Image 1: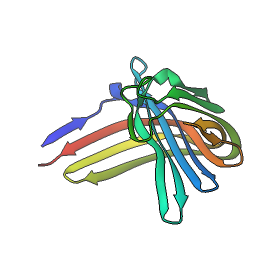
Image 2: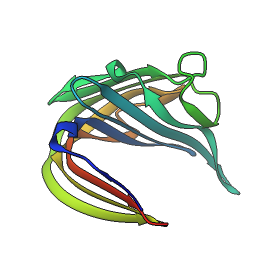
Image 3: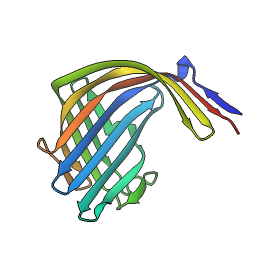
Image 4: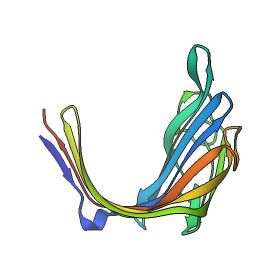
Length: 175
């Protein structure tokens, strides 16, 4: 059995943002999150852009991976992501579809909703059990920008952004 238990010294805090975009026959989703410690900040990005037709939807661009922590900035009323996911700019970013490129999204709080949360969860993946406790805030936002050439506009995007802290993380693997 393998076991990892975080300690208060390894508490992960950071910003996050999500958007869902619908424009005609194309759909997109993006989530970015920041974590790590004050001494070693980290950021992670996932996105997909799909085009749908009579036979279903197919990905045009899809990728995930680490991005420079400095590419995600903001405060309590806004969040800004500005990065490049091309292989030339970020060799650690994995492309499932497409070749990546510039991603720039701005979230501006619109006061439609604000929430404060505190929860715990237990998730099992095969022989691995993950337990966590976390807290944070989330708020609605107007999002604008582009995801690898796909326009994110006030009329086609729904955004959420906020902060999150993981106070405890336990990962157990049972053979």
